[in-house]
Image (cartoon, rainbow, N blue to C red; front, side, top):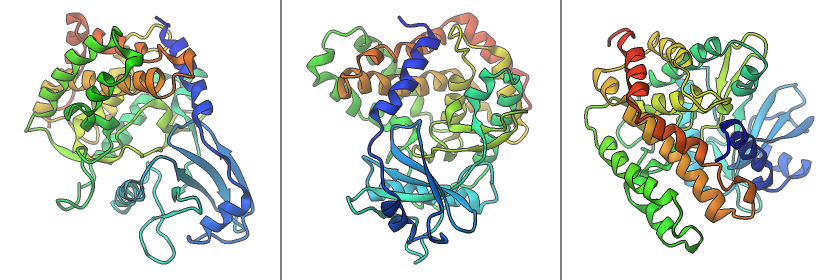
Length: 364
């Protein structure tokens, strides 16, 4: 088993290997002509660090900076669903998240490139990934309190009218729907590459618990970021203040607890020993509760949702590197970092520590 830090490093390094093609200035300019972008294109820079698209920092002749996101392996409908949610969050007055900009012709937010790749233009967020800033010595608790506050602001946004935005059963939220529906289990069962792997019994047991937890009826719902890991949050490189949430590919409407619990698991385990840091969890939840106190039902199911949200991410890593991209052999065990987190949350001492943090938060 790789130590947490080593697993994370290999996982991050693999992102560039899976990243797709580059695009010329002419190709980018053609796409940008559909938006409020002053031509000609003054400068563009490829941004690395994600699996789901090719991202470019683009600057127009007026000096305005944006992010042009080309979304590989996504449908036009999926990209528009995410873009419309991002625009909705911004329209509600929340500025701690990047937003999708409308097309100049008013026909939604997305379009397709010449090769059929859907894309959208996003606001630029000036900052550095929170995990990298914390690694420089900026106090983790300060960064996490800011992240919690920002997530609470996103969760305070209305979910819109019924059917207006996609729900977690249609997409997003770390593909939790695939674990509810058995789609993921079927993919494992059909792959000879993982037959007999020790991940399979672990997954089967945890997926059963996931389905039970996700069927909880009384949980408040709203807009989810869907994947609130530290590398999807930008902060000031000096003082750790929040700049904004980015990478909203998993955005959807669903139980807010999924996002909070996912953020807790993603941000509050130390990279050095992969152990839950209660001081980090306390800071995150204190920041969150200043904006949106947890409901009583959310407190009761918090640990269960920490486990299930990590299971979704753990399972994604397992399939990505053991089935879909077996050629990246150094990442075959990248899932074990998150698997260890799930199992640690079954320990009575760990559960009691989490419940202790929650008990001291302000009530709804």
